[in-house]
Each structure stands twice: as C-alpha cells, then as structure tokens.
Image (cartoon, rainbow, N blue to C red):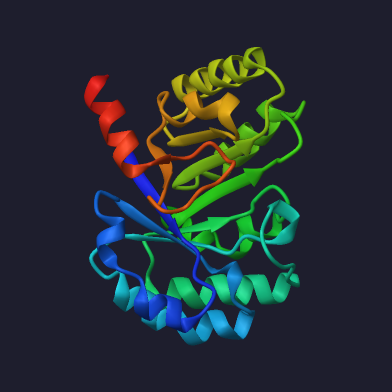
Amino acid sequence: MKIIVPFCPTSELEIDEVELSLFEGADIIEWRADYFTPDGIILVAEKIFKKFAQWPILFTLRTSQEGGNFELSESVYISILRHILIDFHPAFVDVEAYSKPFMMEELADFKDKLVYSYHNFQNIPDNLEKILTSFAGQNPSVIKLALTARSKSEVWDVLMRASLFRERYAIPLIIVIMGEIGKISRLVDSPWTFARLEPVKNELGQYTVTEIKKILELL
C-alpha cells in the first residue's frame, strides 16, 4: 500500500517555506493545485516539481463540482492538465472522469498516468457499479472513488462491491469513504491510501502517515 500525502499550498511563499521533513514516509505527493488561479498554477508548477523532485507527484486540479475550490471551463481544464502532463511529466494526474467524461478522450494518450476519480460528498450513488465499469472500460492507470456513507452497513456494502470489482478487473481501485464511519475503507485492500500531514486536522477521516505505518505493522 502506497501512502499519498496531499500538499495544498495557497502561495509561493508557502511552497518555499514548507519543510520536506513533514512528508517523510510518503510514497507519493499529491499537489492539490486548485488553491491557485489557473495562471498561478502554471507560474508555480516548476517550483513545485523541483521542490518535491525526490517523490512521484500526483497532480490534482479539483473543481468545485467535486469538492474543490473553483470551476473551470472545459478548455481551461484540458489546457492545464495537458500542460502539466507534457511539460512536467508527473507520475499521475487526477481526472474527474465522471463529471467531465470528455476528458477520457482528450487525454487518451496519457492513460498510463491517469487516475479516474469521482467524489460524492452526499451519499453512495445508486449507479456505483455503472460508474466503475464505465471507468474500467477506458483502462486508466488507477480508479479512485471518494464517497459518503450514512451507516456502517453501507460502508461494508461498498467494500464488498469493491472486492468484486477487483476480482474482475486488474485496474487498481481506491475506495475512500469519508468521515470517521469510513476510516476502515482507507486500509482495506486499497493500493493507495491518503494521509494528512501531522499538524493538519480534518473531518475526512484521514490518518497521519505515522498512524498508517503503525497500523500496517500490526496487520
């Protein structure tokens, strides 16, 4: 299981001053770029990739439609992702493939780097299997679903369906069920898990890197 640690800077100064020791134990750094304007992303990209050169980088541009910080036109979204892929060669790029299905064709040449993602902060969608099979049919590098359960039974139902998917497809599947109720999803059969930095508090149910490593040692 690889540990992904998000970095969500809001200024160049924050990039300059962040201590790399905070990310010790991470396997991949996720740069959440949606805290900058589109022009700002392009301006600071080189600085980010140089700063975290010792790690593979997952580039994520989360739009407001799926819990991020701004909305973009299709053309701007495509332009930024293509620019990052071509000029900076990240290990992975997150693509909101459910809400923006046009991206599947637009970035088809980069499938070996694409993480097809879907985020639902309201519930477990009734068409979960349809979403998964649709994503799998495009053969991305990784599939990631972040969902919200209302009960423990819903959590276990999703994990069971994820297990059946993994038996059928070879594509790595990440299931994140947000909040305390879904913390177990971050550790069950997932190829990746997302951890928070030690000083950062959140309500998404993320463990710290230290907590994850201690748990994995016991398993």
